[in-house]
Amino acid sequence: MSDQKSAAGAGRGEGAGAITHEDPARWVPRLKRCLGEQLEVVRLLDELSRTQSEALGSGEMDRVLAILAQREPRVRRLVELSAELEPFLRYFGELRSGVGVAMKLSSSEREVLRGQIELIDEHLRNVSERDEFDQRLLAHRREEISQELAQTVSTRGAIGAYAQPLPGGPAMQDFKA
Image (cartoon, rainbow, N blue to C red; front, top):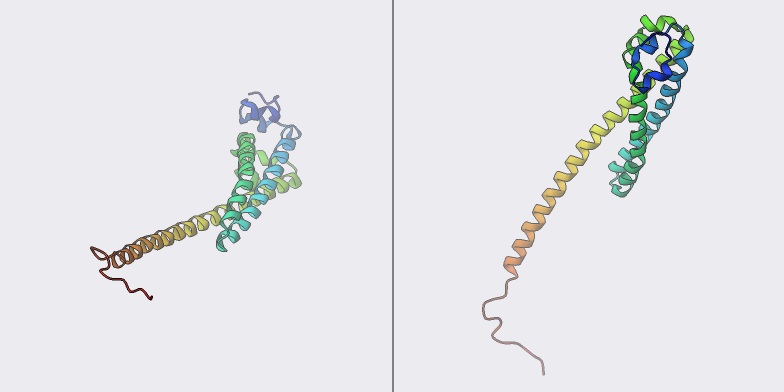
C-alpha cells in the first residue's frame, strides 16, 4: 500500500501501512474516533460488570441474567471496533513509548491516544478480573447446590425407608362410636 492512501481505507482490507503516511491528519482522526468509542464501550462494560458482581454476590440471579443481556450488544460492538482498530494495533507500542510512528504526532495527540489506550486497557483488565472472580463464585455456588441436592435425595431415601407401610397393612383400626 502506498503512503498516499489514507488510513480510512486501512480498515477495509487495504492493510496497516496507511498509518505510516507522512501526514497524521490522514489517519489520526479515525484512530481517535475508534479509540474514543471503544473507551466509552469498555467504560459501560466495566460498570455493568461491577453491577453484575454485586447482583451475583447478593444472589439476584434474575438481575445477573438481565445484566448479561445488556452486556451482549456492547461486547459485539467492542469486537467490531477491535476489527476497525486492527490496522493500528501494531503501532500501539510505538504510541505508548513515543517512538516510530508516534514521532509524527504532536505531543498532545500522542498523550490523548496514549491516555485512551491506557484507560481502555484498565477497564478491560477490571472486567476480566471481575468476570474471573464471578466465574469462581458461580462454580462454588454450583458445587454447593449440587451437594444440597445430593443431601436432599439421601434424606428423602431415608425418610421413604421409614415411611414404608408394613406388609399387609394394619390389622385393626380403632374407631370411636
